[in-house]
Image (cartoon, rainbow, N blue to C red; front, side, top):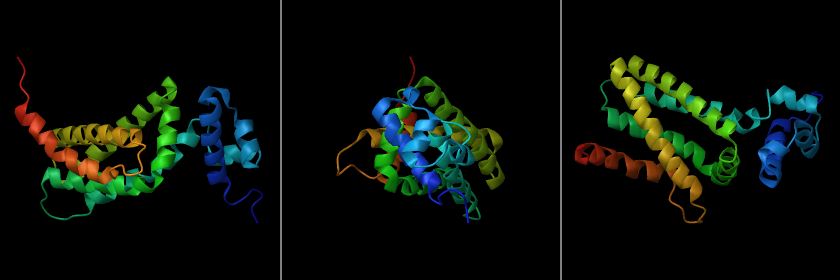
Length: 193
């Protein structure tokens, strides 16, 4: 039998988000998070390496969705089709957590170190996705560009979705689908002087 509650990870994540929202990220200690979750600080460190990690740990569950979607279809596939499949799969996975993600992003946006960690994670993911696209058959230069464009588009739509608190907010997947054709329009219509 475990010495700490089986749901301690979820309780710690909920407690941390609640405390960060109430008091600000910098004002909250690990001991306070553990106390709110009804566990010890030692249990916290069994689940998370540091205070920042409590906000980002579940992100590691999302990258495999992208990788599986990229590897899934066999044979030739157009880049736009593959990008749509991968980003929509990611959006669908995130949709049920809309309110928790909104609260998390509000915390991240208040702290430059957290924003930096978010961008660093995105950069690591971009490299991993570019490698997966290369393995799928895209040229390395094209794969890097596709990964960067995909992340930029997804990030823009994700932040717009998170900022929309209305109960009838368009699903993230719908936002992504709608944004993909506009990317082509922007590329074709934009000129420099």
